[in-house]
Image (cartoon, rainbow, N blue to C red; front, top):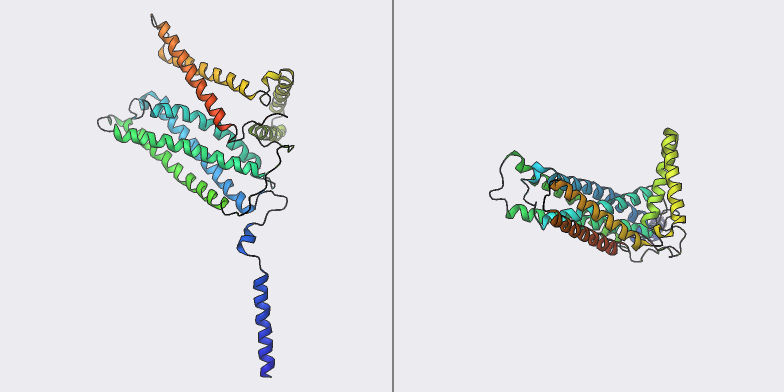
Length: 323
């Protein structure tokens, strides 16, 4: 009887040990993928959190730059109204606006889709880190200027607005950086790299494709509530496609640099025009210096646009060449 009990107990323990051995390890559980997904679920969730938090921080940053540079009463008491902090803010806010729009479009496109291409995950992660790097650089530059020029500049009730805006931006960047760092740590845990899509995949995961998908979804959603607005959007969409077919020189996929130069010239002209309007109509004998200053602004803004496009085109997958 005792032998039977011991044998039965031993058999039970053997079954328990065998069941533990048959369970998947933690690494195997982490590598489990969603059905039909090219990205593991445990890896996809972090970027779904990092992207919106980083975008919210970008909105706070743009509001801070606009408040401290465009509102004259606040700019007059700002400690970073001169270069280099002012130049960093002027160029950085433009890059943040463009990269933020691209990252927002990608997040909207893939946040509810089960198959998330690994290329899109990479671009989303790079977009978040690019935004954070630019914003932190501006915040650090403004903080140095704030500390170095604080003496004797705190006059009036609005003097506390710039440092409060800077503190609010830093507080928004801290959780965004923490979430992005957590995403990076989670991505580094995978031993085997996630296979990427072939270069000749039919669905191009560049910024143009992402913006097109989001635009078509938006048109489809407003079709029932505002059919007239949807009809106008459809007409504009068809017009853009027709222009791209009839005028190949305006095709961004076929001639990305040509379009980039056009955008650079337009951006520089807009900056020079706004500077001239801010100076006032009464130039008098200062017409030639004003033209020279405008030409310098066009050159600086154009060079900045070209440099940003060259640096971020492949890094963020802005435009893939047309085949």
